[in-house]
Length: 123
Image 1: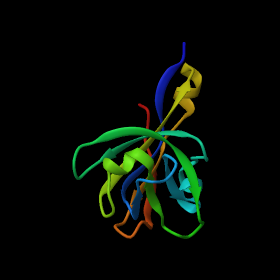
Image 2: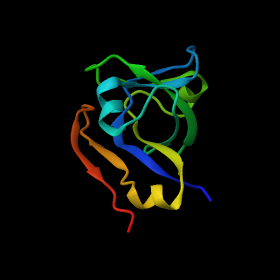
Image 3: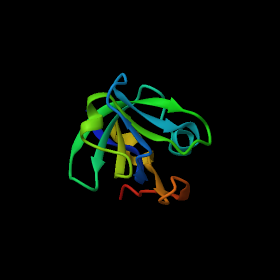
Image 4: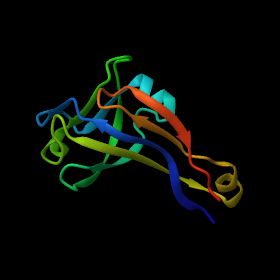
């Protein structure tokens, strides 16, 4: 049996732009993606810390070093520039994979630099 588990998380990133007239997705700086193991086209759930909205979209790889967190398309009505968001990626895992996996979590500073990478323990 497979279970849906947290794969990785970007905790308290700051939205740098919201583009309503853009093809839907979230654009994330490639350095941040690499730090937690996210890839372009991965599905993510986004929780907006400012207004409580929660929505699902997929990842676009942003320019490396840009510190971009851009909400694109209809989701731009749910999170705007300056909002603080939590970006969560889930994966399906067997029991053995679950026991071996420790989700990577990027704790973010307000300027979208990574303060620290931690790994959740599954015990």
